[in-house]
Length: 375
Image (cartoon, helix red, strand yellow):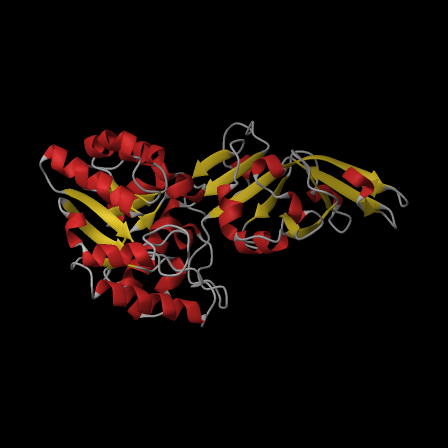
């Protein structure tokens, strides 16, 4: 891949560049769709497409064949609706805001109904409009987060008239532990879901998230809902990732200094220097989503050479030890790869004590974003 300074006729104004490979997102979706077939494959594009850019990602996935998209909030649906054709289904996972039911109706958004109160409100809207209204209905199968709990599900089974005027697009649930191979809760949730489906009015069903797709065809039902795997997070952590990386982050070298033995680097004098060192300061920090918990862990790559991160990550800056690099390779204006082929998003997350989802969704607004295949 060409260095960022070579990729544009003008020097980037931003301190760091976020390169996003939309072709890789499409290939990841196609891989998941192939694995899940004959089930349909949706695309979860909440949190601005996991920080990647939903308005860029969703149209490409629609062109590739995706027809169902899920967001968390009504505002996210409104943003997405401006770039997707009317044939696309946009499901709102966080449910129905009854005071704004007219917005769902006007734009054709499909709420995920998470409790009997939402079902009643949507049924009332159906009666008011005189037409059946589409909805997903979520069943809690053990996560204790969103969805009808056991008591509500039993009431719905006993009183199916509660669904009058509601066209159930799918019964859905969500897996809690699918990212852990062999976790007994995954099979237990699947069984609970199947038991409920057998007693509820017939409709398609959807259970598998990204990791669930890889836990066997019995998890697929009629519709799978991948999210993180589309964006390069490993959905199968116990094995080599079955999906491609999607992002690359490069940060500008601002300054290089010779630091004498006996000194220290960064806030809190957190990195003492037992010997002379050369320290490079990069234009990236926790305001850009490079987490403070990654202080003193991992490395960046400069012209193919690894440089360990030293000292605390601060708001705008990261410091790295370039003592082992040839002096002419690291100078102000050079570029360091912070996330890339040698250290992907999952490794950066592990070094920071978190998960790849958080790294992606914390990517800040200060990057120069480049939507282009990574080659």
